[in-house]
Length: 84
Image (cartoon, rainbow, N blue to C red):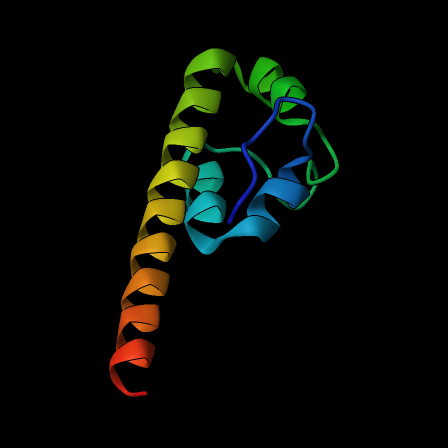
């Protein structure tokens, strides 16, 4: 399960969680090479992005990823029970 994204997390911390989050940050034009140790909130301010909206979008993606992982884990457990 991925944790909820917070504004105090660095771009590196966020991008290391999942490829989809890395792609979202890159798509927003956030510099993951130079600014990887910058917090999400500071990076949004520097880029002129709406921080609350960016945070909301990232956490929506985290929720989607976690739901997918839960569905897969549930299916695996059902299959394991069936094969016993």
